[in-house]
Image 1 (cartoon, rainbow, N blue to C red):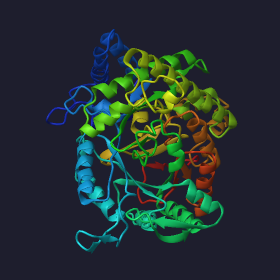
Image 2: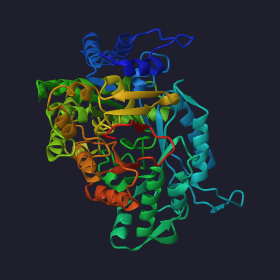
Image 3: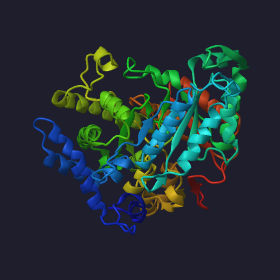
Image 4: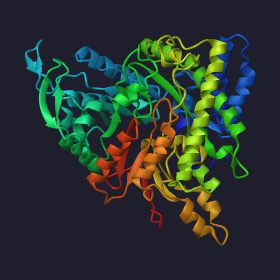
Length: 546
């Protein structure tokens, strides 16, 4: 059953429209269109039954048990036909490479995808440019070029594109990169993250100097105090919510295809590390739907996981790709990213507070089950369709585990998808029982938590509500991180998670969060201090829980 906000979002962004902008399909028609288009991949393989598979796909989407990422809902069965949300493009140290990437970004944004880039190969500001005997303008200046290009391109006719800009901690321009978004006018179409290395963390722990390396020459440009540099990241994040941190060596230790290349960047929300030109389609299981009579229905979760992995593998075949390079490596690795939404609501239904050891255990058990069954599903598909082409030399070949997909699991933020499904987003706690959410194109929706409404009945309602409805700012930072770790321990890729902080939090608190995240083996983390930006995606109403 779709609520008012779900209908509003679908009408605004997802449903097929006529030339006057009026929807010409209803939500059921959208789900049917997507199911039919994605099930067509079955015809590529011996014994495939596209009609039966289409009905399974339609059923789980129309029941809001599983939803794929937004481009799949928008574009499947339509002319654009580009179904992935996540892309990474290389940016090398030449004008040709930089502006080729700008052009390629425009193509991806037109089709509804988001892009991530590492700018770490670009020579630093004021470095020599031999061909002109001039001085280089540095990575930040070129990020502004990408930002402006994004500003003028509407993504699939519905939204501006999203980008992730990444710079290694050892780049000579790192301070400029860290502080650029203190100016609220800067880089509004970019999220920024610093790629933090093990070597830097070692220098921080030992309170040593840390060399910044010119990527053009490979020589040390200067040395900085590691503690001072990390404090600058924390202070900038306190001011503006950015940059986030990615622990790039941790990410590469989990790289499933190290022979193919090194991971340098992620998608815009940080949950999908990808090789240059790689793309990935994500999808999420609605955990609320697997709660039957106050218990987890493990058989239902198994069925949804197997159907979802088949759905995502099919997408790799039926999707239209913006560039041949993207198609080649995407089909070579066949990465999929199955995750969850509705975790906080699932905990409420089970009577478990979000910031409790029982919540951590439940999250780990559920995601461990999805990880296990997603690998079983991928193994079955490998038997039907063959292993992914880059299997040789992969971690799966070394373990002698045939797999159809180099990765199967990711935890995405599911911001808009969770509105369609009428549930809490990703693995986040509920933001508040009443709050406002800013969406694409300035669309603002008011959200009243549906479970909160239901539980207001009865004499012990307020006691239950205070115990179970642990909102984003009530959950202590370390409890946020422990939930993130519970899921990351069972996820191939990474986890989108924001550590929400009250307005009076200090930069030292943020620094402690980063250190804890590294020690816990997380792949990265993002913080957001309330009121640190003039406008923010989520904001509280005047309510006692806010």
